[in-house]
Every structure is written in structure tokens, then in C-alpha cells.
Length: 595
Image (cartoon, rainbow, N blue to C red; front, side, top):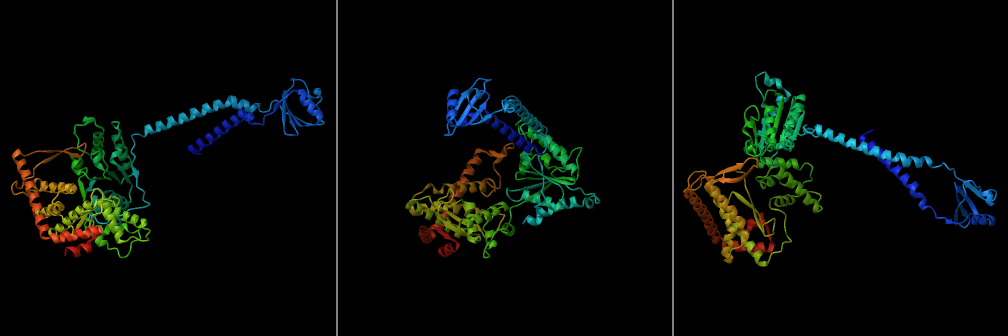
């Protein structure tokens, strides 16, 4: 029997014993009360023939009358009822055994406390034993062995073709190591998967496990670290010991930067628990006792904070970059995520892929899930293209807030503000397509103008940056032009425009005055992994020039926005008027108004 079954049976027995004891002690209190009389009264009732039954329990006499009443009295110990004229020939007399119940009373009063004490000691010992077992296993690794029932292969991973080609070599080495060894080739001991969050690092590692068909141990890097120094190192040793016993095999460490950050940060000294764990990983991967048949896969989105010793040849000497998917790859990812969903045949996945620029595989999966939720909320049997675009808006901009009631003046200002963004976008950004404009509040915004690039691009020109700044400032310019007043609605636009202008000057070298120089060096405290300060590696004179150039770029963008809106003032008013009536305009309606 299992320990939980034994514990349950023991508990039931103890409860029954306690219930029996309570019944024996308190049971008589709940019996029907009897009237106390003298023995002469009972004798008189016997003579008159009103008694139905008499019960004798030691020196206690109870008479049950025919009318339902009960009389109780006491007699001397050695005196019989016959001496009082009560004979058994006229009434039923029941004499109880004087020794009945003595065993249970003795058992419950004497043995039960010892049983309860023994049960308490038993459970305490079990708890102590369990604590000892946990203490003994505290330094053991909690790595999980992959389950191959729902195996994932490279066919289940859309896109990432170059990354999959890199990892196919690892799979082939695990399957046929002799082919490589005969030529003197050594497979890398460590492969580092680097990419943005949600791009598919963990999924690709699962695909390696599914393709290789070898034991695959997976663990998060944070599971190594504990508050006690040495525990993390012990778990690393235990993990690699398990892996060597199951070689050839793969170890996958997720979020490596949790323990692989650069040493010597000044926090905790050389005996910091995280650094002890990192040192042990370095030794296991390329020390005196290493096993070439154990391959370590690791994933991170912060390779810049990793310790250099991890990245040297012999450890993580192969780096596989996972980039955000392009349009073709996004369409392939969408096809995977609609396999178990009833999608209408009219849904154009190519158009959806074109409207999800910059999204990762995890983002696309989330969008399809939101689309299914929206369709279910509307009691639909299938998911339409409109549901998917609603999901994109919800994920990108936030949920609609139709309950937020604006005054008529605020609605009008918001309409002209968004119309200004749309007109500048149409005029200055031909590489982008306007999808929607609305004055219905979403997230923190009172309204929004949504446009997407017509195709993916990886380089951005100075002209494109200036068009972005002009479009961001167009809402503010439109408010000033129509109402001769400025509001706080453009605060976020100004923040983004200023950031673009600063990056143009300090990062991209797009200022003729400053020249092709990168100014400002970002310093990081690696144990926190965040940009906490920017080292000023330029003089006060250059700082003044930077400020002047940022101001000039912003003014130039605002001037361009004013020129375009002045030329298209009639379209601005027409679009704002229609927007006030309909609140939301889609791509087709926008095309008609702005043509």
C-alpha cells in the first residue's frame, strides 16, 4: 500500500475510535429522561399492572410504563426485586450483565491515549524523514527529460531556415558521430541560440530533441541559483553527471543570462552564488573531465551581458542568430497556427502577414488566439478576416474603450489630430499603406492612425526618419492650424519625434554639423542588465551643438508638416468631418477621401 493510503486508513480508524468514545461518554445524556421515584412507587405500579418492562442494571432499576413514561429508582446491592413483591411472571424483567462494556471503556480510557500519542510520533517521524530526503536532494538538478509523445520536429518550425540548417549538423552528429570523427571534425560543445523574445528559441531546441531522438534534458538557468552558496554548482555537477550517463544527449539551458552574466560586477565578491554556478558550468563544458557526446544548447536574448569565458572556443563557440520573421515566414507561421482553427476560406493570410511587420512567432500565435476568442464572443462558427484584424489592433494598440465619453470639442480636436497624421502619412510615406483611422479610444490613446509598410525593409534613410518626424508632429500642427490652440494630445508624439531626432544626431551620424560620430556611451551594471547611465564622452560645446541640431531637425519636420497640411487643408477638413460622423474609417474609405 502507498503511504497516502496508509495515512488515510489510519486517520479513519482514529476518527472512529474517538467517535465511539464520545458516544459512550455522552450517549446516555441523549437517552429519554426517566422520572426518579421510590422503589415502593414502582411496586405499587406493578401491583396495578401499569408496568410493561423492568430493567435492572446493577443497583439501578428502570421501569417502562405502558403509557410511555419511565420511572427510575435504586435498590440495595444484594436485595432482589422479589423481596418487594415484583415477580417475573407478571412483567418482563431484564437484568444487564454487570461486566458488559467494561472492555471498551477500559480500551477507550487507557489504550486510546497511547494510540493517539503513537500516531502523533509516527507522523512527526515521517515529516522529519521527508525533510531529510529533501535536504539530501537539495543539491540535485531538477532538469526534466523531454517527453517524445508529442514530438516536435523541424517541419513544425516555420521559417528560420538558416538557423535550422546550423542545428541539423548537431542532429546529424548525434545520429552518426562516426562520419565526423573519421574526418577529424569535432562538433561544437555548446550552441547558443540568440534572438528576440518570442522568436522561437525554445521551440527550435525542442525540434532538435525531436529530430535527434536522444535523451534531452531541459532546465531554466534560474533553477540553478539558490540563496545558499554552492547549491547551484552542485546542481550543475549533478546535471552533467546525469547527461554523461545518458550520452549521447543534449542539455538545453533556457535564459542563460540568468547565471551567465559577466563576472566581477562588484556585487557579492568572488564568492557570489551566481558566479560559483557559472564557474562550474565553464569547468563542465571545457575542463579536465568533459564528454564530447554531451552537447549543450542555450537560449538568451541578451548575449551582450554574457561572460566572455562562456563564448570562447570550446564552450559556446557557435552562435545561431534567430531573426524576426519576414513576410513569407510570417505567412508560413500563420498557416501552422490555423491548423486547429476553423478559418473562413476567404481569409487572405498574405495580407495578414503584410500587416504584422516586426511581429515574432509568439505574437502571431497570440493574434490567432485572440481572433478565435473574438469569434467565439460573437457566437460565430468560423474565424473571419475581420476578426483577425480586430485581434491585431487589440494586441498592437490595446482594447477599445467605447465607455470613455469625450466632449464634442475633444472629439473634434481628436478628429483633426488624427486626420493630420493620415494626410502627412499619405503624402510623405509612399512605402507605407494607411489601414485605419479612428477617434475611438484604445489603450492610452484617444485616437489612432494605423499604417503598415508595404514590404519588409532593413535599412532606413534620413528622408524616412524626417517623414516619421513630420507625421508625428502633424497632429499638433493640425490642431494649431484649425483651432489656433495646442493640447496635451501630442505629448507622446513629441516624445517619439525627439527620440528619433536624438538618435539621428548621436547614433546614426545624420547631422551635417556634428558629422559621422557616435556620441554617448551607454554604461550597464551587468548584474541588473539594464541601461542605468549614459557616459558623456563629449564636451559641453558638442552637447550644445547636439541640442541645437535636435531642435533644428524637429523644426524642419514641423515646417514640412505645416506646408503639406496647408496645401491639403480642404482634405483635412473633409476627412475630419467624415471621421466625426463615422468615428472609424477603413483602408478603402480612406483611399477614396485622400485620392
